[in-house]
Length: 553
Image (cartoon, rainbow, N blue to C red; front, side):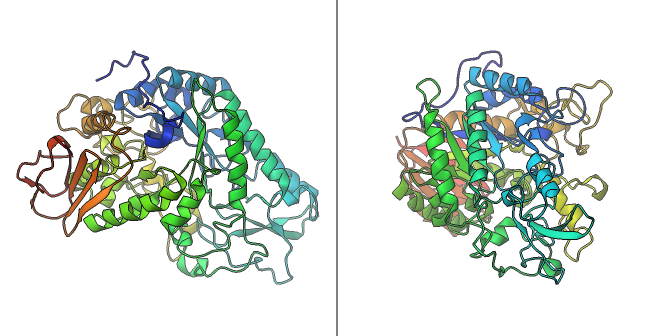
């Protein structure tokens, strides 16, 4: 294991400064990573103190969820000031210290940017409410007059459930215009057809680039522009069928998502990022959260003059099935090849059920999770890991009285309530036998903002460090081994076998075998020497729920 006090950079070598092409990026959910001040909520100084864990793990960068000034109605994705830190998380001085320490340890830093909407407490929205209809202030958002029927301007659903429109009360106390919010009613959508909005976000990019960030994760990157005229959608009635998730919405050609004008925004951002390239730290980048139904649609966001990466959620949504994984590989790589872009791979994040639970939970889910992770890490491109997956954490069943997600509050009384995303956001365990498991420094045992399970003592970083067979040590070994071939194995992948149980693919000298079946399977011939296995080392056969890497002799 690397000495946590050794500042030697561990980042992968860059290709023309494009450090992200084969990088492993670790997502930090700021509220739930580490609490330095003992208030039960994670913060920037907590992240800074725990950066050696990420360096020891072997990642190349961290992506931090929003830490901006916010009422926290959607845990920071409702931004009231894009140029300051919410006091809950620290200060701009703390942000500068985090950046400096990360760079000292050889870690790049990606910050979350939320361009589709603001908080209703943002000065722009407050000014819009005060200014009234037909004002320049209201042109910064999507306001529409009532047509006399007291019904929303169209049938668009909110991702968090219910209608995507709310009506304001005007200064004289009368019902006024409707405003669009594709998420919570406290998150009004910006009007990207107003040039003032685009100019504002270029200034925000420059503010954080000037402070030293290495890149941006672009929230709802497929949003921003809405189809002219705001026509009705084909999605089901939100009152009848509950929330319309982004996955469901992306499954149709919908007027609120993936409009062609959004690509002009990213061409402009590409030029801004290029201004900050330098020989010392390499190039700056942005990765799009673009929910789209096809690999080709995702690839449009990474054309040479747009963003550098786009999340590939098809690996995340694939079933535990050899053919399903093979299909994602064979669809993803050809879609990116015309643009010279590398793919991204992800199994979990702060918006979805943790993959250990999706794969069956318990020992079975952990075994499958490790196997899927090894198969993912063997592929060309970047891997994005979600905090706690290196510990084998499962989804937590958060009690109704402890839930905080706006999707829960918007749908709890409906026919199809959404329990929300709190279960994957429970603060991670660092040490000790009982909650809060070292999450914060409080001697009185102050509990975190979401309760931790009582059986996590064996899953802490402390308990797993040095423990043979632990998930943490598996991740450390996998990332260290990956570093030996990530830049040299090439970007071509041949799928040699796909089902019924085995996935076998070759990438240069590396061959990966995954057994998604229910029984041991014979190994193909001439695989070479075993590099690493996610479980029991294979002999003539490979056990079910196991993956292994082999290197050609």
